[in-house]
Length: 403
Ligand SMILES: Nc1ncnc2c1ncn2[C@@H]1O[C@H](COP(=O)(O)OP(=O)(O)OP(=O)(O)O)[C@@H](O)[C@H]1O
Ligand SMILES: [Mg+2]
Image 1 (cartoon, helix red, strand yellow):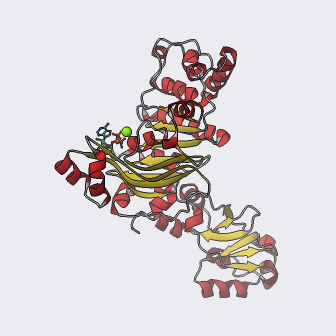
Image 2 (cartoon, rainbow, N blue to C red):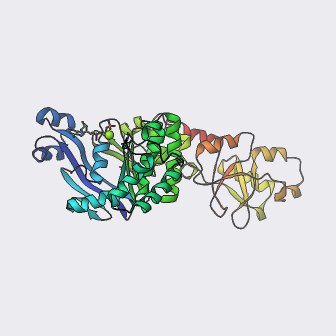
Image 3 (cartoon, rainbow, N blue to C red):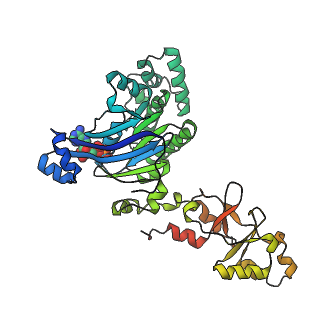
């Protein structure tokens, strides 16, 4: 399983949840618990194992992506969260409260106030306008008309549909309809959004727009979003954490980077093999230690000594605070080979290195090597050197052959 630490105070906790579909799931449960395969269970008992022994924690304010192929159990899992599905075994906690203990009334209240769901296919009411669609859950929940209208208009604007509020769904493109669905989910005060393949029916360009819009919204709203997709690029783009399901089993949970760099098993490895790592892998996990030299000790002899000692192609020259004031590569040494000793002790003569931070992704870094012989230095928020990246290392990290 993944190396990432679970959130300390999860918004949603799923604990050993099993769901078996069929006539008498409880009678089949012991066999599932002791490891009979989905196929064996189906052949021998006619029951379908939807999900098997899933435990995971979802932190407040994160976007948690569940991904897997068709039939892997994604919808089954997410529907446990608002109890559209009851587990065969296990518990689901929201804000520490066991949803299975809620009575009908409490459950309805939870679905209205705490959790809203965005479906794959819009699920708009065709005979109601955009505004009425977005207002609908609020009205059902007893919010006064004026207040509901105000909240709805605000979200219609948020998703970029101002001016369309009096149109009917049939007047809108698929992408616009999906935005209405999103506005409707956002208009409620729910702090959990369940999105089951919410963007999958959209064509790629619109889908990309929606992903960007969701990210932007989320950076302001900090809802807890559980987002289902079977698209790895979408998962990597949106997910703070990603869970990978296969045949109802959880194969791995981690950040996108965890999953790409340390796939838990062959299944995950095959799943992520063809992804563009450059967009996901950051300098945090791929940088190396930098060889540094204090500006006060600067000399040509010392630079050569360090380059030879560490077998590096460059040295980063730093001030007393460990901030880079220049960088010397072999090319710089060569270019300055005829300069007098005094030239070498003046940091003003040295080229400044390119800088990046831990969260910079490799794809962003590669073009910056072109035309530069200075190294790329990784600095922290205070500008202090925390590592470096060379073009060779960056390319090696992008290659998919370390699995
Ligand atoms: N109501 C049901 N009755 C019987 N089997 C079901 C039911 N709902 C789901 N299943 C089975 O449970 C398994 C998981 O289905 P689920 O719908 O959760 O998959 P999914 O990952 O959401 O797939 P998709 O990507 O196609 O939406 C499948 O084998 C499916 O056939
Ligand atoms: Mg599904």
